[in-house]
Amino acid sequence: MLPSIMTLPEGRWDAYLALAGEEPQRLLPGVHDLRSLIDRVPREGRTWLGVRIPYATKLGNLTVRSWLRWPHAEAGPLRVVDGSMVLRGRLYGAGLSDTACLEAHPRDSAEAPVRVPLTLDGEARVEGTGDAGTGAGTNSSRTPGAEAGPGFTVRLPLDALPSGRRVWNLWLRPSADEEPVRIARILDDVPDKKQIFSYPPQRVTGEEGAVHSVRPYYTLDNDLSVRVSCAEAV
Image (cartoon, rainbow, N blue to C red; front, side, top):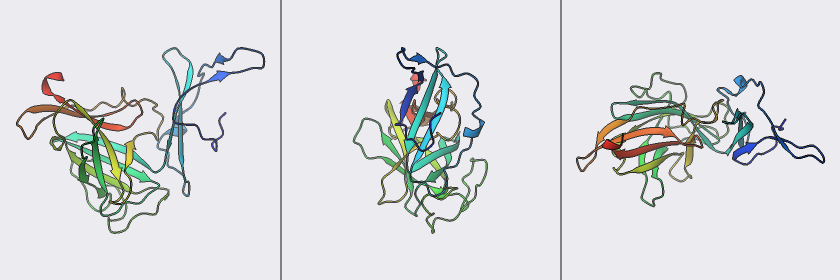
């Protein structure tokens, strides 16, 4: 058993049994109950977040996927409606100010990010998100490390992302003078979201008039990104 106070660097860790004088042997997953991992909430007052999800590999061996994040922006319900991505989530370890926004950064490029303002849940409802959420308004930044974490809703118009065969990584910037936080979904029992959470592509028309296919997806690290490609490729 790995103690909860032990930090495990972010990555994938294969589990072995090592006995004195013997060759280490890969462990099998056996029967394990992961229900306690669903809808986890970081404890109040913590200064780091370590997440570990055990799973069986394709060969039936035991491996642990681990993350170390703080602050952490947890992605919640996500819908693709009317050419937009509507995302609800929570930020842990930092507050949200009037200048908080979502940033889409082009992968492998130094171009400026695309920024979209967000709304604190409870102040306003974004059409198409399904429920309103609860919380304080944008005039009062939440206490960093608070148990619930400030909830937010953001609508990203998919035609705001310039065309091209490009991936845009999504970040949350708590305020204009703070560093952005990568948006991910790790507080549950699913080690690999990419094959589980699938969202329909949207055909959008860029400024140049060309039609492109755009869709959000989770990366191999369970980070949230958006892929823009030529319409014919989908």
